[in-house]
Length: 403
Length: 194
Image 1 (cartoon, rainbow over the protein chains, first blue to last red):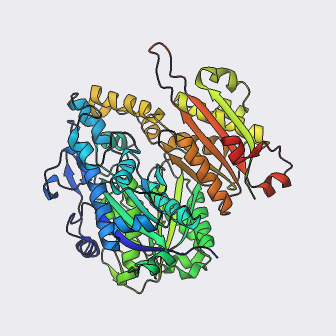
Image 2 (image 1 turned 45 degrees about the vertical axis):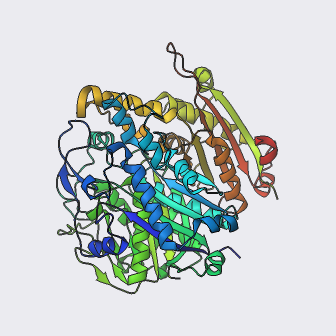
């Protein structure tokens, strides 16, 4: 019998009501609050772009730009730990606790800052090291967080493009199931940067309008940023310490399109395969899914591909399952997105509310599922699914269920 | 039962042209953008040949676990340097996808048609941890065959020639799968990868 994995803590820092708590985030999300504004990237004069940024003024203390992502990751993890009720000192004497972190660009702003201020050399900034002990390597923040909390289990940084966060959760679950850990902190993070803005603009992927996932007039994504963590543990460990349980992770799978480096497989072959494999992993029938949090970037190809993948995986049932894209409000935060969206699935289960897809006005004849347009819907949700797709044909799916 | 190694490959970037001559027409005719992707695909095709897996694989039964250390930083530095120099128009749409560490693994899945899960860990000395993870996934029956390994950057770069990256890959299989297809077995994962 496989170990049941439960979620006992969540922490989320996104452009939506950052540092105001998860309840405030969720309330604003379900109200359809749009965080995307036209702004300049952090360092270079690259023009103005639609972005969902965490205003530096919202931070509880003054933060250098290059310290932002380390601080967000650290605080999101701290929120999740506090939410779980874990006493880190005693728990590490009793359990193996590890960490997985999904990211695409890591602390890319450290690289950018060093261009602007060459004196800011690796190892030369005490403030950076005081926060998490990181440098500009992709694994630096995971290592720094593990060190800071004295974790005694596996530490794994995963970088699978925009599926990184979902894979971080999936890998964390597997580490518990295999007995390598009793508790895992699964996180995702990424930060807005000149690097990403210039890159996505070069691919003509950034919207010139609002982000309108699944709408006929959608024309691109807006970049976002954030960090989010979940505390995952074996059910027996959670019950032993009488922890409050948000829900369970019941299935996970990842598949490759094996098709194209930047574009998704046009029929959603890899994503459909990942959905089917995750459902098979969960050992539940297709008709048990009550809500789907889509990758929903707002690009013409992604949203059509996702729609086709859902139809391929669910058949006619696809028309009955509410789908929504929270990226319509939060932008696309790459490595953070998968964990943020898994938390949205969990909160949908907890509160019986499905967050909306905002800016949805004109139906696309080819995207004809129920995308929860503009207004949240109250519905009992027992099982939900979060999907991520990324460059290189990465497709990852996670299934969550009520306790 | 312990998982086994049924294929191995190790190549160095400065021998890439010699290796390319040994590869399939599909791989040789693929339009690569960056030398590192050609290098990664070459190492993985050699591995599949050594393991007796036909190319293209065309299956979701094979997973790919890639560890990559600083190699991706070289690509990122090149991409970023162009932006600093030429502004927004300096951003190369051809190079940008390769700044994501999973791009090298992704090109291997595309060229060699590998449709299973593909996980990339961008950590120094991550080859050991991706091999361990592949072994765990197989032991828990999530997968039955896996490519696991990575790209190692040289410690010191010469200014005069391209960095001499090294690729090390292993084909890991559960013993039943190996026996069923009559594969050559090098030894257990622990024995071979120690």
